[in-house]
Image (tube, rainbow, N blue to C red; front, side, top):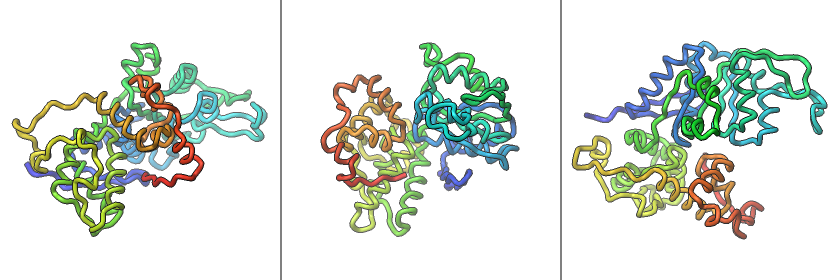
Length: 349
């Protein structure tokens, strides 16, 4: 069966290149869900395209001409998250020189996107649930209740059902957020998208450049623990380092152990029985990817989190999960130099 020609979409200024049937099905389902007011929980690994799906839900909805507001729940501590979501009045706390509306107010009649919703602290989960149940709320330090009409979309790379079972996430909030659940497949399950996105990112850098066959094989066989963000970084870095405008397998910089033996691109796109191999353990891939990136950044956790496309808080949680805290010191001398600007390192969005 021939591969589908890549299709390009743009949702609220974010471009998506899609060639895989699975991702096209996800976007088609999102288009149907968009016409409702259901709260949607978008689940998928970090960097796999959850925000693209969320933006498509807003752009294709009846609220498309109303505000779109997004916030990462893992990027701010609890006390700042509360003031961001619900706002505050002048004098509510030290430094509150003027009143500030919260993100719920700013998103009135539109859409509020809560990324990394699994990172919310328990107290914030209670307050969010009350607002989702259409209960009026106060700004911090306020005396007047505020009522908003907001459609909430949430995204997470965590298994919230396990978090509920472990007591880390409220069951009632989980059910309130997941009136409809959309799963975004990881890049390794969308081999058609790997080649389409790699070609797209290479064109963005230099339209005259190209990949060799062995480079395309390596791209298809790599497990992509960092998904689309990692793919963009690797293609951009390879394009910068290439000397003759042709990117070969060695230019990609993959660790040999993480790339299985070469396989033809056609069989990678349409695997036959003889090409199916057991998938590597996902936890092992994620653990190794974290170690690799921390090695590249010389232990600088903030920089490593940026390269992995996750928050620093999520990285710290992963280090505890895989018992890597003792193996990965907080910061080395070189990392301190990096943070002070004496080490130059490029960043690719």
